[in-house]
Length: 106
Ligand SMILES: Cc1cc2nc3c(=O)[nH]c(=O)nc-3n(C[C@H](O)[C@H](O)[C@H](O)COP(=O)(O)O)c2cc1C
Image (tube, rainbow, N blue to C red; front, side):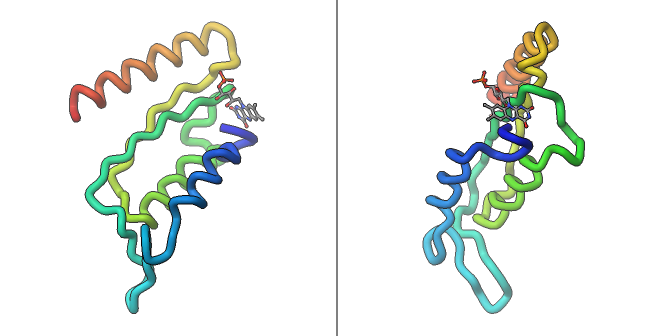
């Protein structure tokens, strides 16, 4: 998380992959994502703790863009409070556990 949004580098990547006629297209019924049948895993790292708060603009934005491109199966792993001392270490361990759980279910 950079300033409550996604870092510019991630935004550049999204701009690079969001291509009309390639990864999405407009139809008579509206936009259609062309990247279907994919699972998406997003590791979110943050200095503070904003999960499920209005300040977390990342998750709704990423859900929207992935859905627009056809990807609705999106899992988020949160590593938050990383700049908050010991809570950060705990949060990192929790994130690693969440990844292990996702990997064992895949
Ligand atoms: C430019 C910048 C902006 C940041 N903005 C936020 C923010 O709005 N909220 C937050 O929780 N953390 C923020 N952070 C902290 C980063 O999310 C955190 O440092 C990063 O996820 C962990 O990676 P690191 O270990 O490389 O720093 C910011 C960091 C930088 C460098």
